[in-house]
Amino acid sequence: MAGQQPSVGRDVHYVSRGSADGVYGRECRAAKVTEVGAWLPVDDRDVDESERVLDGRRFRTVEQEWHPEACVLMVQNPTGLFFNTARHDEGQAGGTWHWPERV
Image 1 (cartoon, rainbow, N blue to C red):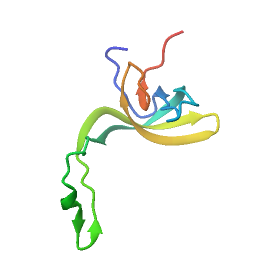
Image 2: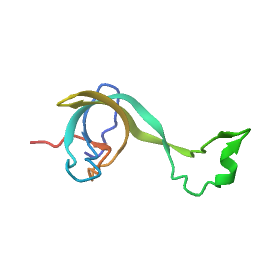
Image 3: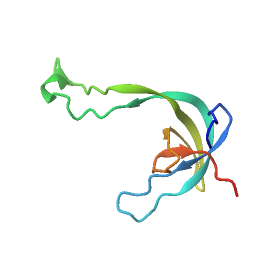
């Protein structure tokens, strides 16, 4: 819905990712916004592996970028609650949130 802004306490829908083997498909779940705006990882596949070891300890560099419409959500599943940070996507890709459809 154009013009809406996420805010703490708003009801939204979260789209589950489904299982990797395809047994479980993506499902739309009720969710509540608990925090607005989030740092989300950017693809880090180009990090040089030789830079990941320091003093015998392995490190991974994860570049992040700020997403003002990403939200931390309390997702309501049939088996219980879980908390997840998700990007906004009205196209309803798995692992994202969108505004509830009007019926």
